[in-house]
Length: 83
Image (cartoon, rainbow, N blue to C red; front, side, top):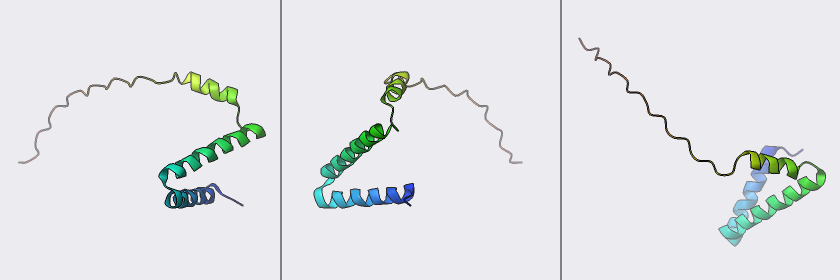
């Protein structure tokens, strides 16, 4: 039985091994390839609905403008409690 923690540990080990063996660029390329194959397999098994994914991306509105910071109201300074 493979748990998500074990799978994450194996993926981390494989990434570091590829990084040491081939370099960082090739290791990242391996991760991108693995993610693409995972997405393809999920689509073929019916776990990934591209229409729903497209709707979620469109509902997000793309790049959003950051909210304006709220100005903090000045607090009155407390009196020292020294007698």
